[in-house]
Image (tube, rainbow, N blue to C red; front, side, top):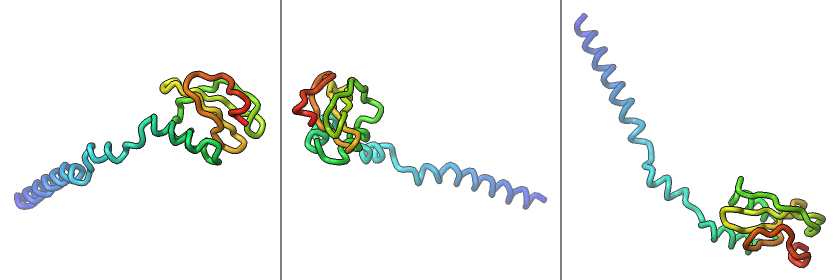
Length: 121
């Protein structure tokens, strides 16, 4: 009877020890995860969107970079019909976006409710 009790205690101790060590052993450190998640700076993102202005898919890039941070300011004729002017308050930048072709047609510093017609064609 004492032998089974001793074996049961040893087995339980082994499970508890393995249970405490295993997650710590296989979990990557937070420093590695944080450095892998770092991406371009906000200014680099704005520059990239400006560089790709007028190219199909630029709207996807805009949504990825500024998801949840864009406030619609107004709609105006341009692009393939109408464009929406979206303001990023954190960076004080307005983007003019054409949903028909999923392109950013204009980017300007400040809160712009209507771009000049020549910029959003």
